[in-house]
Length: 141
Image: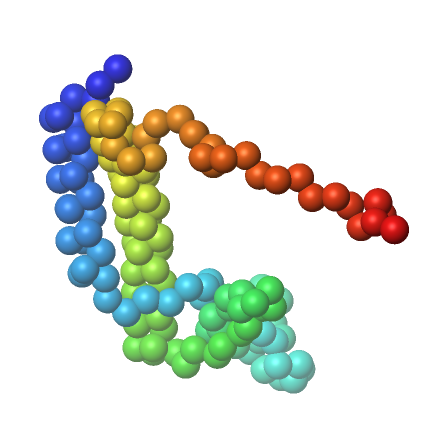
């Protein structure tokens, strides 16, 4: 069953569109940003009152590096907003890459269907001559 040429062209256009979107990726970083509230332990502090939220938030970015969790403190203010944007950009990057891989895989399959005579599209042919058997070391005197 041959692939429809329009399908190949449409997949090439999708891939080109994804490539253009990938070119617009800005600053990015992986991880999770968490705001934490804590109690200081002083009995007269507002955080010791029942139902009080505590001090904070203090922001930390965690991510895995070579199987270990790495934590980085992010200062409150504009740095938190900037980090949130970088995390969102990383998620967008991952989605674009996944879509690019899917479209590229479909395109490669469609191209193979459209041109069965392409190199590598046929069956395995094997080596031109049979390999010689080697005797095992145990059979030597």
